[in-house]
Amino acid sequence: MEHRLAGLWLPSGGHVEPGEHPVETVRREAREELSIEAHPLDANEQPVFLTWTKTVGVDSHTDVSLWFLLQASADDTLAWDSREFASVRWWAPTEISSSVQGQFDPHLSRFLAKVDTTGAWGKN
Image (cartoon, rainbow, N blue to C red; front, side):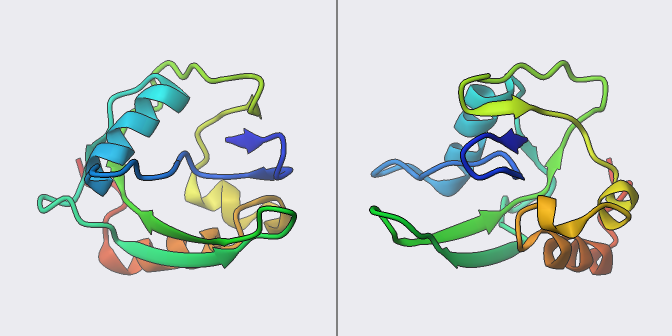
């Protein structure tokens, strides 16, 4: 998702609400941000990657991100909040690796390398 404020292509996501399980956060954010149903690939609904990023500015803090793999289809119609995101699109891993890396979440290349080692690409 092309995030207007960050100026980067970022994965869909958001903050966990009090009392909310992180997998429920994934499902809620996928509905809110993309209008799709999220189906984690991991049978135990566990994240495959964890990162933390220090933010800057008046409300600086540390974001802890749980990265999940989701089953989706390039045929899924995506709808998004145009106030927060300039555009959305599906990216193939090869498209990301051959693009300018500074335009993506700073952890994305490590995430893709991690996923590549799991053999998850192409699983249904």
